[in-house]
Length: 476
Image 1 (tube, rainbow, N blue to C red):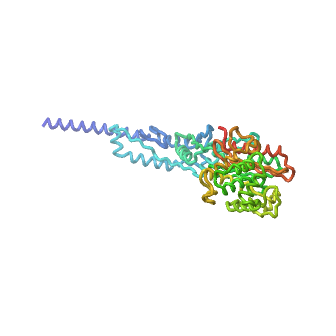
Image 2: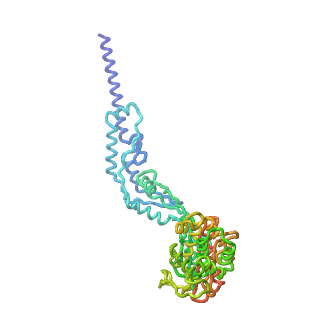
Image 3: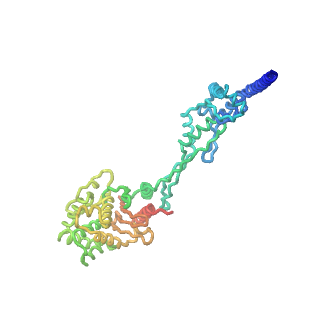
């Protein structure tokens, strides 16, 4: 009986001690609940041990602080008002209470009693901003601080081109994400905006056009006719390229082509001599007329001119014609799209005419034939071989005139060309230039309603040729 009484008394005492300890733990738990638990953050702000009021006040201060923005070394400030940033304390308090209730109750008391580590929790904070206003801020930053890529610039005084420059532009999408995160953070209110590099625009043939036009503008009384073609890409540039000009000796290129169409290689020595003298520095009209009469015209120079004209038109060169041999009378002339224009005229020779475009395309046909294709071979199947077209190019490379196109080009540059000029104008040169960075066609016609000084026109042609060469072979 005594043993039972003692055991009962022990149980009562134990229960009383446990009840006291639990009561003490509960009071401690209640006291601890007046501050926020360990591991709790709000918008990244640690709030452990803070009262609700302290936490909300710190959030209020944080969201009233501007975001520091760094872009391309510049430090900017993004005010909350700029993006209409609003911190909703009431909704944030409700979110906090919901989290505390979920973490409280019996489970929370047990966790407290057992001193179990609390699970970290980030309480959702109610903060909003205007996405439209944020985009507006980014647009202003881009306008003020971006460095867009710059195109190449012609430098006419030096006949070279300043290379294009790469750009630095704001990465708007990535910047929007970074700033949005900074705006809703109570601690990390700084953002360095990323930059996108953009490559410099490639040197464009239109920049060469600007250069040539600038050079021509210094000679307002001269009418330039220019055609340039990149034989690698097919890009073209033209200034008055479809204006009619006197054919001059440039039409001896057409005579050369028609001679090789009429004959099979190898040519006999006499015909070779005629070609050499008509295409070379002497530019013999007499030898050119022999080719027109005896090879192309089968004994009749006028018939040779007629057949040459028909062939040019068949090849798609409608503005090129001859109605008579060199230095012969013209019984008539031929109307073409070029010489019937009313907007511009050079009063070209009624006996023979062409345009910079037609001459350039004819040279391109010979160049392509030399490589085994192109219009000549397609238009006249079996009439040309690559060796014959190579021989045509070779003949034109022997025209070492040391003026116009070739005079200012680097030593050793191969130019297959034909020059021509009248006593008072125009002055012209047309050729294929073989250069290290690419072959190209260049046709230059310079005419004037007044007497055209050779010193002026030849210097201008040389500058145009040098600028064109520098375009295709930029210095690095």
